[in-house]
Length: 133
Image 1 (cartoon, helix red, strand yellow):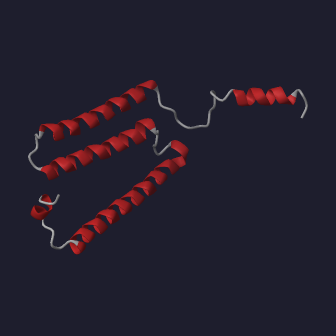
Image 2 (cartoon, one colour):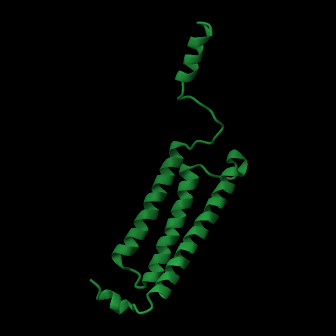
């Protein structure tokens, strides 16, 4: 390489802060909306659990899971900028694939744990488990 080409290469690589890769970047307003929604979607389930407003533990658990799913969507939209327009829709396809894999993994794990508990410890009742050391 010549001496003239080398400084030009350094200036190109040294300016790494200004790049335009075509990806949509959020505005300050978008980040603040996402932050506010995240705080709200964390505080409400926390309040539900700590206050004991709803007597049924199952209903409370389903509400907390619903808020968690809503928070996942908020994070994907406001912080990861995943929408149908970015990268020709491939990010949405990747997200759908990820959700399918997570559902398969979690449901399979719960199924295996339930059947292991049922088949491997048939003598253990909840009352007997409370008395265990």
